[in-house]
Image (cartoon, rainbow, N blue to C red; front, top):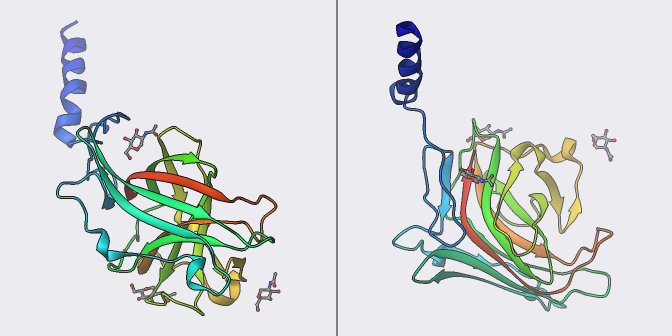
Length: 221
Ligand SMILES: *[C@@H]1O[C@H](CO)[C@@H](O)[C@H](O)[C@H]1NC(C)=O
Ligand SMILES: *[C@@H]1O[C@H](CO)[C@@H](O)[C@H](O)[C@H]1NC(C)=O
Ligand SMILES: *[C@@H]1O[C@H](CO)[C@@H](O)[C@H](O)[C@H]1NC(C)=O
């Protein structure tokens, strides 16, 4: 009996001895309790003071001749919570060409040793297909490839979206490239990160109209 009790108490103090992180508690109505031990925080839009969004800029088809789409990234601060909102209006061409996005290239991410990007987000509105667009090694603009991964969000519900870094593939203007020619994403030197919504010129499903994606944080895990 005594041995059993001792075993139990060792089990109880083990997490303290090993400094095992307790899970982060999540509540949709409150500020997320971030836990930097649990992955590497890349952008925490719940942080005080609020992150400086002037480091982000729009990249939408509006900068091109027939472009008609628009994106905005803003901080929403209420008395209960704070987060970023990525608002978009997609007005694609008849064939689905068109996109609206927001990106930053102000910091270089070294994600060596991490498996995935993880984001806590909620989608609302007409569209639910988004993508994350990365660039590496300072090759942040055309004609260099963007490394992209698509994801779908359930509407009106906060979820963690997990995007394995190995599944980012190279694209040029929305068309997939041959990875054996341009090489895989260099995880140790990601120099641009962006949120994007797209009309779907190269996909069977098309989307258009207005949407919002609320974003609490983006981490590497
Ligand atoms: C979301 O991510 C956080 C931190 O990474 C984690 O603690 C939480 O359990 C996750 N929630 C879900 C529903 O997976
Ligand atoms: C990709 O490029 C490699 C090397 O140039 C070539 O051998 C291969 O056939 C290409 N694959 C496709 C699908 O084009
Ligand atoms: C990836 O980036 C690192 C610098 O962070 C560099 O040393 C390495 O050569 C790059 N890898 C490739 C395949 O270019």
